[in-house]
Amino acid sequence: MDQKIRLKEKVAYGFGDFASSMFWKIFSVYLLFYYTDVFGISAAVVGTMFLITRIWDTALDPIIGIIADRTDTKWGKFRPYLLWVSIPFGVIGVLTFTSPDLSLTGKVIYAYVSYTLMMMVYSAINVPYASLMGVMTSDIKERTTLSTFRFIFAFAGSILVLATAEPLVSLLGQSADGIDAQRGWLLVMVVYAIIAVVLFYLTFAWTKERISPPKEQKSSLRSDLKNLANNKPWFILLGAGVSTLIFNSLRDGSAIFYFKYYFQNQQAFNISLIGININYSTLYLVLGQAANIVGVVLAKPISDIIGKKSTFFYAMVFAAILSCIFYVFKENDVFLIFLFQFLISICAGSIFPLLWSMYADIADYSEWKTRRRATGLIFSSSSMSQKLGWTLGGALTGWMLAIYGFEANMMQTVETQKGIRMMLSVIPAAGALISAIFIAFYKLNDSLMLSITNDLQQRRTRDEA
Image 1 (tube, rainbow, N blue to C red):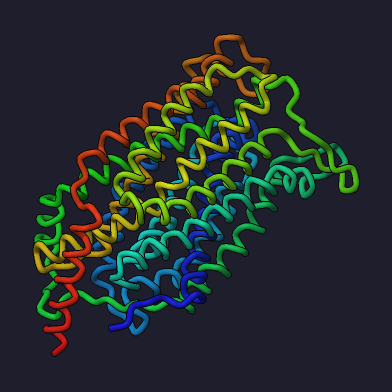
Image 2 (cartoon, rainbow, N blue to C red):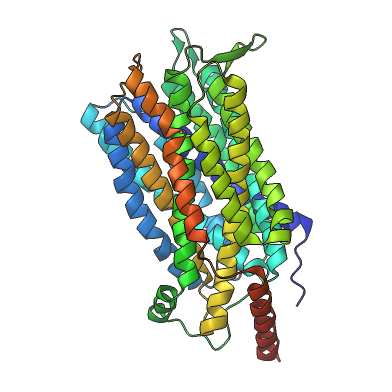
C-alpha cells in the first residue's frame, strides 16, 4: 500500500495544530497575566486553579483516546472529532476570556468552570487530532516529515497570536476612557476562535486515515491498558515529554512578567500610523516562535544523520546550558537576551516533531510486540504529557510569583525581580536537563524501528491476502 502523503494533506494536517496552538499559546503565555492583571485574581489562587483543573484534564486525555480508538464512522476513528468539537472549542475559548462583573468569589468560580470546560474540549479535539498522524502513514520518515509540517504550522499559529494579541487588545479595546482590556481580550478571542474553527474543518476535510487495527483484534480495554503498562519506551517518552513541557511552560508563563516588571521601559517602538505600541515582550515571544520553526525544520535533517534520540538529547542539554547563562543578563543586555532566546528556542522547537513522531513509533512497537494497536490511547499519553507538564509548569509559575512576593500592577521588590529572572532561566533549565536524562534511556532507535516497520508491513500484507 502506498502511504506517501501529498503536500495538500500535509498542509491540511498542519492546519489543525495551527488552530490548537493559537489557543495553547494564548493560554500558556497570557492567561495567568489575564487572570491577575485584568480579571483580578491573585497569582496563588490562579496557580492552584491551574493545578486542580489541569490534573482532571490530564486524566481525561486517556479516556478520550480510549473512546476515539472505539469510534467507527465513515470518516474513520479520529477525523470526526475535528468536525464535531471545533465549534464548542471556539465558543468556550471566547468564554474563558470573558470578564463578567462578579464578586471575587464569583470570579474564581467562573474562572474554574470556564477554564475546566475549555481544557475538556481541548482534549476532545486535540487527542484525536494527534492520534490521526499515527494512522495516516506507517512510513517512519514520512511521519517525521508530517510532524515537521505540523509543528511549522503550530509555531506559525503561535507567532500569529504573539505578534497580534497585545496590539489587537489595544486596538479593539479602545474606549473613551482609554484601553478597556477586558473588552479587548474578548474581541481578540472571537477573532482567534473563528480562525480555529475554519482550520479544524479543513483538516477534517483534506486528510485521510489509512491504517486500521489488525482484523483479528477485538476491543479490550483491559488488554490495551495492560500492554501500555508494560511498554517501557512509553514511560520514558512520557517522562521526557512532561519535563520538556515544564521547561517551556515556565519560560512562556514568566516572559510577560519579566518584561513588565523587570524592564523599566517595556515599549520597543511605536507604529504611529495606527497608534499601536510594540513591546519588548511581543518581540521576544515572536522571535522565540520564529526560532522554534527553525528548530522544527532542522530536526529532520539532523535526526536523519544522528537519529531522533540523539537529536532530542543534545537539544535539551544545550537548552539547559543556555538557560542557565541567561540568568546573568541585565536589563541593558537586550541583544544578548534576544540572541539567547533565539538559540534556546531553536533547541526547544527541534524536539517537538521528534517527540510526536516517536509516539507514532511507540504505537508501531506496541502493535509489533502485542499484535494489538491502540493508537488513540498511546497518542493520548502524548497529550497527557503536554497537559501534565503544562499543569506543573503553570502552577509552579503562579506559586513562585506568590512566593517571591509578586503584587499585580505594582512596582516589584529586588527579590521579586530576581525570582522572576530565575523563573525564565535557571528553574526551567532543570526541566530541560531532566528531559535529557529520560531520553538517554530510550531504546527505540531508528534502525530498530526500520526493522519493526518492515515486519509490520509484511504482517499487514499477509492479513490482506
